[in-house]
Each structure stands twice: as structure tokens, then as C-alpha cells.
Length: 324
View 1 (tube, one colour):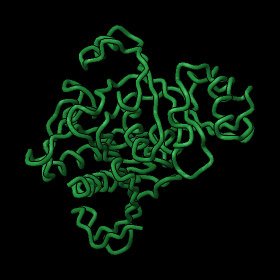
View 2 (spheres, rainbow, N blue to C red):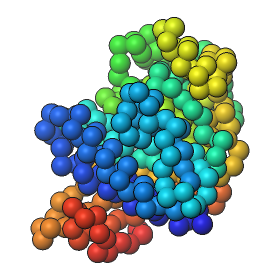
View 3 (cartoon, rainbow, N blue to C red):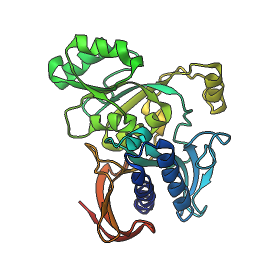
View 4 (tube, helix red, strand yellow):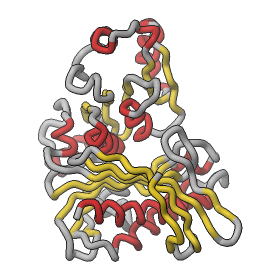
């Protein structure tokens, strides 16, 4: 059942990617995001799912569709929490840059954190460091612990972080330690996920969107990695939003179980623009298009890559699909 649901969900992210990719490099992030959102919402109606959006485009008064609490699916399937980011990297698409994706995570009802759209402090690592570090430690302590566990010197390690002014002091501390730094212009979800992929990034640190943190945690659970987080409410309204979503102590350390529960998790994503992890949409001659997606299951720890040729991108009908 979960495998069938995962394939239904990836069909939805494919649709969002195909629609939003048309706005690549056009300088209009709002139209790109709107195209992805409309595509996802329309496709959900045909999925055998009794789903509730716990992470989406905002609260009911902020978003006309895919708002937190909205029911998705045809109501005749399993009861699931759904976390969705129709276009992770709106500015990335608008500026024609890499690593934009459309992403959905799903878990049995009551498992995914209802994360408000505020900043979250994050620490993401791959399987070798999972369960070994703490977000409560100073960054210098964390780096030395990781170095000892990995059996590599600090100059041999790589840490990724969003290139933001708010990270100035943290970046300076990383420089002082001697580690290599991968500065990310965008791509909070992908930045965390790549710590568990076969590449040179050992750790992801810094702050980014809380909803993106939960999505990344879902993927990392499937990959055997770990995400720790802490919400960073800045205004009184942020504290009130946290409490409305059931978080009486917004400052508590959030573990993987806090964010994605103890049950099964499905994570699917389709590349909109090309990146290190997924290829972007390619529009082909003869009214065809190619998408590249990933499907992950936490229970089986399987990772499947799906290359799909769409015969008519406007109708999102699949001519040929092959798992590669």
C-alpha cells in the first residue's frame, strides 16, 4: 500500500515540477510557486488518501490552497499527515539557479510535526554521526566530536550552511576551526539531505525554515541520518502560532521522533532545476518532457530514482517510466 501511495505522490511532484519549471529564469518567483501549488492541489483529489496537510503554504487565512489543516486525497485511503513544499527554491527557479525541487512527505496521522513558518536552528548529519552529536553543544565541541567519530581531521571535513548574514558568527567559527565550508545560496531541504548521501558533506548547520526542517527530517529518517532542531520564535505572534500548533515549549530540543514520529515515513521529490541530487525538468522535442525524481521509504530503507518521459506535459500523462 505504501509503495503504491509513494508512486501516486511522486506523480504529483512531477506535475508540480513540470508546471513550475516553465518559469525558470523569468524572474517571477510568485508565478512559479503558484503554478506548482495549483498543480499539486489539483492532482491530490485523485489519490486514495485521507490526508491532512500539517505543513503547507501557510495557515488557512494565509493560503487559498494547501493550507495547514486542509484535507487532501479522495478520503478513501489511509489517514496520513502530509507535509508539502510545492516549490522549495522559488527564487532559485526565478533566477535560473540549481537545486529547486518539489517535495512531499507523508506519515501515519499524528506523526509529523505541525511546524509554523518560522526559523529553526538545525543540525543534520548522515548515518555515521546519527545519534552521536547534540545541537545543545557549542559548534566547536560538535566539530571535534564529529572529527573523532569519523576518524578524520577537521581540515578533512566539510560543513554546509546557508550563506546568510544571520550566520556570520557561525561561519566565522567554522572558518576558525579549519573545516571546509560549502556555502549554500538556497536549498535548505537539499542542504540537510546531502549529509546522508554519498558526497563530501559531513554536516549541515545553521538556521532555516521550520517546515523545511521537518521535510528534511523525513528524508533523513529514510536515509539513516539525523536531524535535530529548535524553533526560533522572534515575535510574540511567533510564540502564539507555536502554541496554536500544540507546542507549549517552542524552545525545546526537537529530535527526529518529535519531527517525524516513530512510524513509517514516505518522502518523494522531483527536480525542478538540476542539482547535485536530482536533475531538473527537460522539455523535449515532440511535445515531451523528462523529469527526475526520488522515492524513499523509511521502513524498507529503499531509495528509488525515477526517470520519467511525459508524452504530453500539459496533461501529465506518462509515456514511459524507468527506475534507474
